[in-house]
Structure formats: C-alpha cells, structure tokens
Image 1 (tube, rainbow, N blue to C red):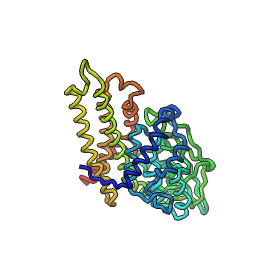
Image 2: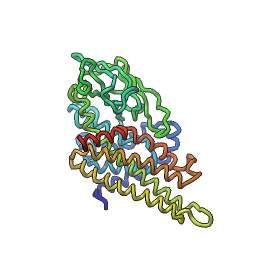
Image 3: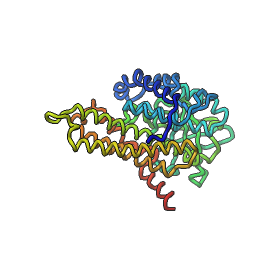
Image 4: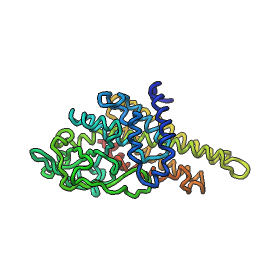
Length: 380
C-alpha cells in the first residue's frame, strides 16, 4: 500500500542516520531534557555526517537529495521519541527561505554553514500579541539608504537560544497595507541590540531551546533583507505548505511508534495469568489506533508525492496537518489509558510523547486556522 518509493541510496542514508542517533543522540536525551537544550556540538556532528539540509544542491555543500531524505530524517527522529533536536525546523522550514529567496551573496555566505552545522537557523514570526495572524505583528524594520533599523520582540522561537542566524519577519511602519508591509531580514547572532532570552519553561519539547528574541535598534546592512521589500507575507505563505507537511510526516511517525511501543508493552504486561494483549478490549483499541494511523500515513505519503511533483496542495496539507496532529494527541491519551499506572511515570516513553504532542496542533498555524483555510478553498 506504500506510495513512496525509497531508493537504495535513501535506505543507506536512513541506516547511517539511525546508527548515528543510536550512538550519539539517544544515550544523552534524558540529560538534554533536564538541561533544556541540545548542545550545539550535536548539530555540528549532524552536519559532518550529512544529515542537515540534505536537499540542498552540492554547490552549497548539500548532497543534492530530495524531500524523501527529509521524510527519512523525520521518521528517524520520531524513533528517538525526542523533539529537542529539531533538525527539520532548520533544514526544511528555515533554510529553504534562503535557498529560494536569498541573493547569490547570501546563499554563498550562509548555506554552506547551514549544511555543516556551523550555522543553526531560526525563523521569527510569532510575537507576544501576534500568532497565526501575521498581519498584526508589531516588530518594525525601517530602511534607509544604507541599513535597516529593527525594533520588536518575537516569542516561542524554536532554536531561539542556539540560533546563529534568524530569518526575521518585520513590518514597514509607513506601509498601511498589512500584507505589503512585511519583509524578511537575515539577522546574525551577536548583532548589537539583538538579545536572546532563556529557554522557555514548556510542558513538552523540554530540550528544544524555544526562546524569546529581543531587537532593540538592531542595525543590519540593507543587503540583509531577504528578497524584495514588501514581499515577506507572500514568501512566508509560499513556504507554509512544506512546513505543515513536515508536521504531518513527523506526527504520523510519532503516532506509529507509540502504538508499536504500547503493543509490545501489552504483550509483556499481565492482567491476571494472561498477557494484557489477550484482552479483546485491548486488542480492539490497538487495532483501531493502527487503522487510523495507517489511513493517515497513506494520505501523508500521497501529500509528499504531490509536494515533490511541485503541486499546490495548501488545502490538502492543511487537512493533513489538523488531522494528524489531532490524531497524535488522541493516540497518546488512548495509549496511556491502556498502559495504566506506568504511563504516569516519566520512565514511560509515551508520557513524554503525550506532553510533546500537545503543541503540534498549535504551531505552524493552529488547527482552527487549518480548518479556515480548508473552508476557504472548499466553499469560496
């Protein structure tokens, strides 16, 4: 029933990545969760092994791979049951802005470092008073003859502490049209006036360095603008299809892994003299979850196939995003119900997935926004 076809090269890439995660990531996950950050040295090691930005062309240091490499990365990272090392945010969400809209000088300056792990990226859209409604952002960028002066605050920024480069959305205060007012800018860590907050205390994604970013009279050269002035909103919208598709891919694999783990646990756990898996109620619950996940997985693979073919699937990706992220939350809760008391302990891996899954229906556009998009495409 699989729609996607992985080549020998893809499978070799996955095997190498799996071995890397087994030896250099999984043993330290608990430590990173307590420290609330993944060390930058791991990003560097990921880059050295060719696991960052695999879709970038060889001229920028990439392997010239395709989006199936991104699917593989999401699948393997889900296997670790850990969201701190959010490589997909860097590789599949932020870096594509620079690849698609950056000048030749910007691409030459930044992309090789993005591949090697010397540059960790973040995208800064969300603000304290502006989430899914990008037109309401308050961060300003005033351009003059030579430079740009930026003022404002961004929040809930993934990779916010570790980031070396930020793709920042800011508005021209003199432009009245909120959609034409937004432009994107490249701001380097260490630029005077640019400060990072501490990692935010979150219920999940504990080792993902989500932070606030503060910009006070930050001056960057005018050449630091990404793409044309006033095109930021359209650029952001153009990349949201891939961002949301990555969410679908990741949550599908997290759901699969939860059911697999719970199934194995039910085989070992005993209810009286027999394994819990012998209970019809348990078997039916596992079957129902596996069926739902398989249906969404097939839909996800179809979306990946269409995305790789260059098709506009905003509506369908929005469907996948809202349904898959609702599914991962529902699956986590149901698995915990089956597991029982052990599911309330931190040593139970499903407990972490339960916490981590909550944010998935909020980021990259809330699921309510997804439904509005679907309705607009369906009924307008």
